[in-house]
Image (cartoon, rainbow, N blue to C red):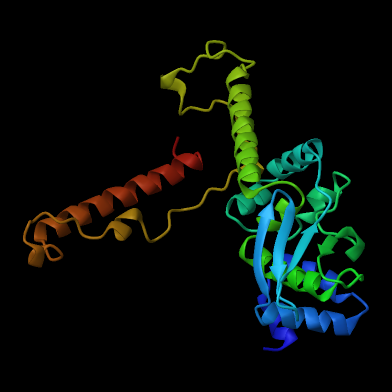
Length: 277
């Protein structure tokens, strides 16, 4: 599978994480790290709070111990971030569904933070191998593996910043729930400015309008040729389904109603035009 195909199959946040490592200037070291990741040299990855602990098999018999972490946000900083998330319904809905919103970084930037590291120097890695350069190929292999973990679970990225999936979802639900309660309470406290008895409604006058209408708002036209009777069709007077559409009684009633409908329409038109008093 080509690099272009791999990039297209990854979630955007995973690719964003890997792009930082791919900017590393020592390309041969990166290639060895990528091979370690693909060939199964990363034996285990686990999380301890906001730190990643892994074991990577190198050229020696004994595997190397690798740790990797980012600077975790404080409780206060996470409080601001989750509060901002809860104010955006789309963000809250996607995160509660386990999906990373496309512009999630805006939430962190608006609070003076960054979810993603800016440089490799922001990623704190340690390895028990003798290589003094950071990141070594073992750290790089773990870094690549984390990119795949992010595709499976975007909350892993939040965990590196000090907040677990369970904590974020719980905080979001609590804030969204409290906001809904506040809206209901505010709605219940709204009092109408006009009491119901101030302008009593008289049912007898409900359909009457004594004020003259502006001529520009009134359009008087004869009834159209097709009426509601045409739309309804023949009235079924028999329970015999075969004779329903050809019922003589139904035809008589329809003709009678059509006569009345035409007569009433003409009288209504003449009344509207003030003809014949």
